[in-house]
Length: 308
Image: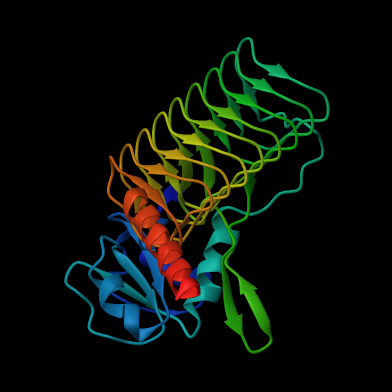
């Protein structure tokens, strides 16, 4: 998430009321999670296990809960609770503002687009030319929708990420400040739910077609010309490359990659990253031919045991 203007390190430290290490005038252009962080960004880390990864990331400023050696050319923000302070920055730079109309005055709707009754369109939404939005669709703030996109009834774009920290008093939510971005020529079925990124974007690329009742988690990127069938659940931070086919009732772990042209057969649990150009089945996931052979061998063994 980029800020509307570049800030200095000392300005950020003042917002958080925390100490800092580094050049007070150094530039801070935005904030991001570790998997999408860029030069000029703030990233947060609150566990020693991930200190090294955060300190060696592309981030320029590390919001951290311990004073450590600061890498050359970088800066630290020392916080007793980086999770809390990351939320504080999201609220400061991208606050939630309640809507007063069903279609925001700041929404930009392209020529030839059709908006059916009872659609909600939030602030700063962009909808391209000749797109069709069917009844009861909800489009949260800052969502970007391309040209020739069809979205069927009751689909929700831009709900919050499912991301919580377990504290003694209960679960503490990481506030979402990212977006959903749909490129051109995408079809979304009825009652799909696509969560926005925490700080970055959840992206569906050109030509992808998605069936009814599919869920896509935060910061996931789905490639071009993919097919995803009904009741599939895709976790957060997943990368699905171009021309992947996913059949019904598939579920995935977070943070995995499904390679270009892969086919995931129905009811598979994608528990790890898989290479492209192959067909997969089962839980734990295997190449479909291997899994079917395994099942046949088990069936034969049980039959032989019964007959012995």
